[in-house]
Length: 135
Image 1: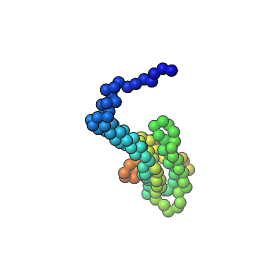
Image 2 (image 1 turned 90 degrees about the horizontal axis):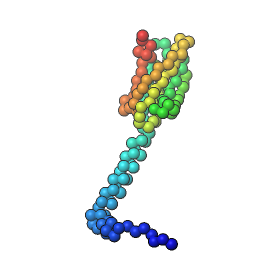
Image 3 (image 1 turned 90 degrees about the vertical axis):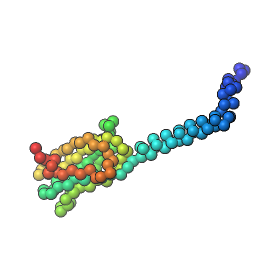
Image 4 (image 1 turned 120 degrees about the horizontal axis):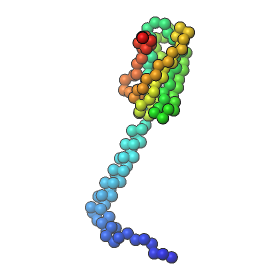
């Protein structure tokens, strides 16, 4: 059998020294902090998207969120009850850029609006149907 490969004698002696232990502890704590930062930075956060209208409520509203890779990560469609003046979607998403697509049916026509936004946001993302329909 062959002899095991041994570390240079000075290397292990340096690791066992006081300054060597400090360097090892520094890299251990730094590595753990980097992993925690990466993990907690990618945790889903909560936010809301609101669609409001003043007159002529839509029949239904649908909201979809598409991430940068083109995959739809959330989709929700709801009929609008008579007398309501808003549609609110509470989501939980990983921070990043998303394509937000809002579809609604109003006056027998289906309309769609697509916007690129950074979500989640601290404030609710608010859209007014009257502003979306303006030429």
